[in-house]
Amino acid sequence: MDAADRALRRLRDAYGAGHVSTATLEVRTALALSGRAEDAVWDLPRWRLFNREPVRALVFGTFEWPLDDRGRWTIGRSSACEIPLLDDAVSRRHAEIAVRAGICLVRDLGSCNGTLLNGRHVTRARLRRGDVLELGETELRVR
Image 1 (spheres, helix red, strand yellow):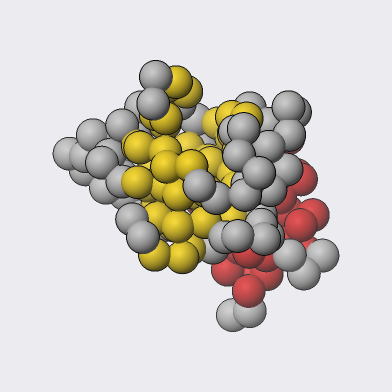
Image 2 (spheres, helix red, strand yellow; image 1 turned 90 degrees about the vertical axis):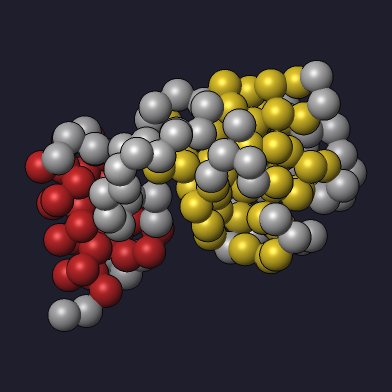
C-alpha cells in the first residue's frame, strides 16, 4: 500500500468518525491524489487516546490564545496570522496549530529558525498540556 492509499484510508476513517467535513474530505482527497499525502493527513489523529486533558490555550506572558476543540491557527509575524508574534526571529508564517478529536498538533511551515518543542527541533509534533513551544525568541506555554 503506497502513501496515497494510506492517506485515503485515514481520510475515509476520519470522515466516518465525523472528524472532517465533506468539503474538507474533497480538498484533502485531491491533495492525496496529487502526491501530497502527508499534507492531506498531517493533523488527523492516528489513534484514540482516553483520559487526557485536552489542550485549551497557548500562553505568552499576559497574552492567551484559546484553542477550540477543533480548528487551525497560523502562528507568525504576519498580521494575517491568527496568533501574531512581534519577534523578528519568527517567520511571517512560522507554524500551524491544528486541533482535531481533542488532539493538538503543531507543524513547522518551513520557517528559517525552526520550531522547538520542549527544547527539541520538530517539523510536526503533538502538543500536550505543560509543553513549551519555542518560535524564534518567543516561548509559548501550552495550557
